[in-house]
Image 1: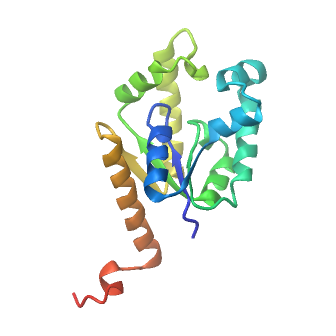
Image 2: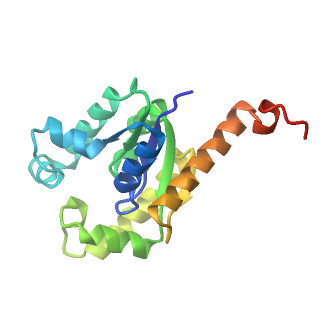
Image 3: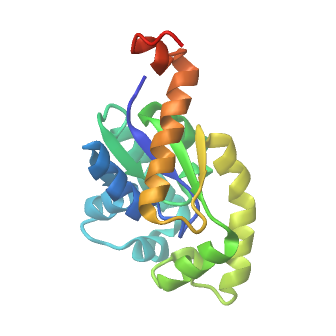
Length: 188
């Protein structure tokens, strides 16, 4: 079973900031799919790529980066909020690692996402309307793709990381039948 961790979720849920801390805690490498796309595009920002090439071409770039990560080891990968839109990407993410969906209440997500003026899908006349429509359309896809779901509403990053680690351990125990008490020789 692949030990990588893939973070998915809507914009503003904390994938990158939590991912960096989680990777450090686990002694893993940290990758952000948006950063990989920017590097391959020689520094062109996500907003510029959306404006110059459109969303479909951006999604092609995203898929190409995910293909490159299928054989990666010991990484935490933070994905862009729309990475789960393509079925191929969802399959690639499952091949890369365990998928953890981070979510928070809509007010928290909108407040965080609004702080970043570089979000191309919110650079519209009615950002709140666009946000709500995107969130509503994506939540079922996040939930279906996730192996684990973590509600980070109101949680400090360190507590969110603890929740992720705990949930991953429980998930692994369920999948393998491993019981820590038996492994330690305990006679419970």
